[in-house]
Amino acid sequence: MDLPAELRERPGDDPDDVVFGSKFSLRTIELNRPKKLNSLNDSMIRKILPRLMEWEKSDMANVVVMKGAGEKAFCAGGDVAALAELNKSTDDGWAKSAEYFGLEYKLDHYIATYQKPYVAFMDGITMGGGVGLSIHAPFRIATERTVFAMPETTIGFFPDVGASFFLPRMNGQVGTYLALTSDRLKGANTFYSGIATHYVNSTSLLDLEARLGELRFRDYDSLETRLRLINDTIEEFTTGIPHDEPIHIAGELRKAIDRCFSHGNIDEIIAALRNEKGATEEWAARTLEALQKRSPTSLHVTLRQMRTGSRWSIADTFRREHAMATKFMKHPDFTEGVSALLVRKDTPTWKPASLEEAAKVPGDIAAPFFAFEDVPENMRLRLMNNRDYTEYPHAHLGVPGESEVEEAVLAGGGRTRDQVVTEIVGRRNGRQGIKTVVREILDRKTSPGEGGAVRWHSD
Image 1 (tube, rainbow, N blue to C red):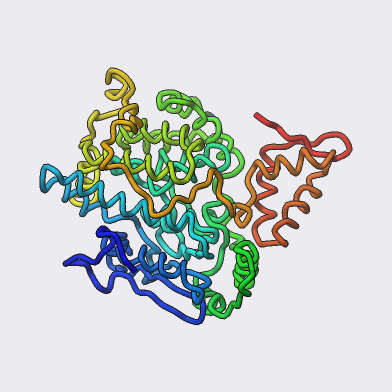
Image 2: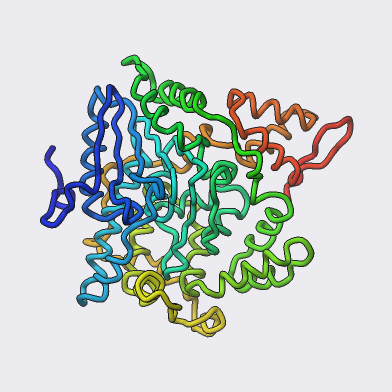
């Protein structure tokens, strides 16, 4: 394969940081830096992307599995410590860091638009760059060891790797909440929230992988037909969601998240959190404390990102995030945040230093990061293909969202709660966990009507 220069092996690349496997029609990619929690670097990307391109053209490769070595992490993120050091090393270090993000986003976009079934084993820590390798896949498998987060505001950055696309499309204000606070979701809750499409115990992953390798497709099978077969196969290995792990973001907490994080600026979100009383008052106090520790610039940029990203296509998302990342490489908060938290192990000194100081900055502190026309032509991201979409094409493989439940309530002509549950669970062939998700949505968004029918609350 005639590769562009950016994908060719370079001196110093670790030959063993990615391990590729082949069994029958299954192809596997194992991130192999367990001591670094499989953090993603450019050496790994230069191996992975060409192999994905090769397999996509091959009639012998039918399913691709992405996984991480060891028991602790799928992928804990990008190697941001190396980028911060690069930013400090030379005057043009920021430009070299921007090149890394460009390479990473090309890989993420390629995965998001891949034309063959792609399965991500989100076993262990799945954060930052690891989310980019998994969240856009049609199949995202969580286990009891999964720990999901987008922790970028803690290091003076913004949720990237396509977060502009997937977080605003989550139910209500959950995506905005996760983006601003860096809160973590663990185990089954990554499934309940829609981050993962399936939940499987980690002890079953090897057997599932072997079974995927045994699948046989006919030449004329459509991609959708193949995805349905893989979906049914994954379901064979589900052994039940732990009963002691209820939905975390639900009930009064979920209502509070929607109340507080629906506002259009950070000051209003802070004020709303301060006004929380009763059952959610303690949560609000913890959330306020967390936000005060984040980079003020990151918070303002991230909130605007959450409000505008829902209108971006998947290709626009990565192009614009690359422009934003380039500007963050020039901003002091990223290098300071990474150096303080990951190297010095102390408290970062942000610029501006606090949300109060940020409020005194003339103009809109976030606006420069969204001035995409300012990016020189030679620094604009050029993706590996021209594929694009405005909504995930295989969203039906995951858990139902509020819009689907609303449609089932309103289109049914007076359906009861049980009828709505039965309808949506039936659409997913009785998959585990779906009933729990639908019931939680109905608890919050409906009330009893005449004759037992449920009424949807649009507020």
